[in-house]
Image (cartoon, rainbow, N blue to C red):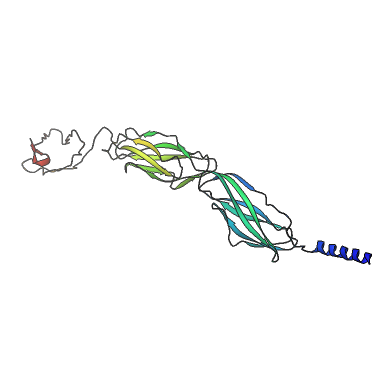
Amino acid sequence: MQRMLVFACLVAVLVGCGGGGAAAPAYIPPPVALGLVPANAQTVFSVDVVNPYETQATVTFVTATPGLAVDPALSQVLPPGGSTEVTAAISPGLAGAFQGSLAFEVDTGADASIQQIPVSATAEVATASLATAALDFGLVAPGTSADRMATFTNTSTVSSVTISSVLLPDPAFSLITPSLPTTLAPGEVATLLVRYASTGRDVPAGNVTLVTNAVNGPFQFAVQASGSFGGQDIITFEDVPFDAAGNTAVQSFVIPGDAISFMIEARTAPGTELGLRLLTGPGGKVYE
């Protein structure tokens, strides 16, 4: 009778040890440290999700800390003990240390568990520098142009800098290159080619402003030009006929508001005398 009781206890112990074979062993996902990433751009990375069960299981995405993202439609069947590489993305939005996590469910149908994967990074905002303080185009003849160059650098370590537009102080100035918008990789240098086209009378000056996503902007450099060559505007009347009394028809012309003097010049056959008979100015004032 004593032997039968011992045997019964042994059988009970063996049955208890063999039950619950699908239970998940202890599994802690390793953290993911991404290092330096752009604060305002998306960085793609991957994480490993593991099936710790002794039977196949389905992996689905549960949740993510703001700033992290995974395809919400994720659904993948893993064999016992298998793993899968899941693509994720980070876009912190603010500079500095970032701490977050991604949560995935591993479900066998009979058992399920949540795998929480910690994600850390240091976020960098875009910065840049402008090496040029001013561009002087000097004296430019009317109808011609002059080019000058400014240098702009993306000083970020991992962030891109985009020049989206340029504000110019006068229509006589234009940006020839680069075409906008243009994006600079970390450390890349852009040469800005600015052109001044002289119209003859202007003496333009002002600031060129670069509109970018760099946090230490805006960036400006001064531009100036002398505008005209010798201070002259030449007005040509071509051939002017004379009547029997030796007079021409009235000839009208406009003097620029910034002019301080003007000269009338006529060319005729040798030995012919010409003179200015009547000059009428603004308001009908007569000069004889």
